[in-house]
Image 1 (tube, rainbow, N blue to C red):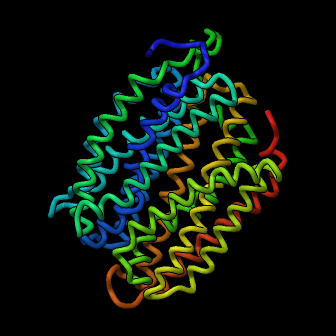
Image 2 (cartoon, rainbow, N blue to C red):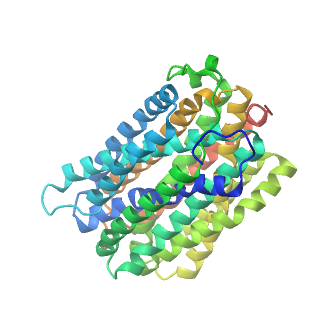
Image 3 (cartoon, one colour):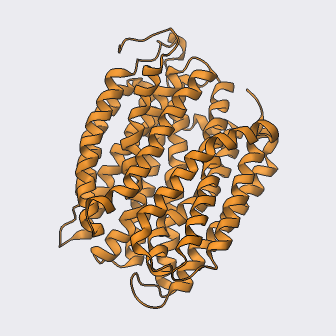
Length: 418
């Protein structure tokens, strides 16, 4: 099963390949959504200081991604990279969600570093493995859809499980960490044992390109710029959503349900966005998703305490818009890689893509948390709800408009067929 194959992939192959996407996504949600509020409220770290630590850790992590991609292209041993990543990711998540009573800040920094390293190593290796394994557009689509489908399932599980495991958030997250470790072990084993190795590459393509080589592609640079602006707009609400639910809506118990609704809507909307792209093009459809997301957050700014039903509708609309962000950027990137015949340096492309993704999250935490502290917001305290609503709702709209403008300006370059 693990030998390289040159025959069409069977369903068991692309399902086995995608299985690891579930625990990877299951780890990402607590790290980016739960950790800011958990360490601010439960542990008691000052918001401004927490924002600085999160920004520094995420910037360091993002800077390593192109180097990890380049190293992976040189070694071309994706399975070995995943094996190295697994213990780092498991131990990092356990440490992150079990902080000590004293010296929590250096503990957070160390746990984030270990978790980020394991997550980056596994994610880049898995993405590059899929790019090398798929022999044509159809197989690449199946492999990507399998990985992203399992990923969405993992996000939903991570959203609802803490509330099911315990009544209080801290205990729920603690137990989630142990469930994550068991899930990671089982599904990583399924991927490593069930997914085939990619066919051997011609010897002339074995040399990995330098880490900066992917940035020589002007279309890739433009796609990264659009993706960066759009991603910051998505990462800002992800960082602040639990604060918004607790202190603006005053509906903390609904946090997990809102997250689950958001990601389920994203999965449900994928097919519709693909159909729309066939009619108007992927870039225009992506811009339509940005517009829908912006309208949803304009509505959210008008909400107040008890507006649970209205926010559920907003989660549904913004979740549908998420489908465009999930469907089109990776597809456009895959086209660029195919056009450049870059599969032998796929790790380089995905390394820079990972850097952009994490830079979005780093900037979101680094901008929003210190800004809220400066505006006088304190989690769980009276006052500051207006500032929180403005940062949560209005700041993302500005970044979405920038992204939409760039995408429209460069639409012909981004949509160019390979």
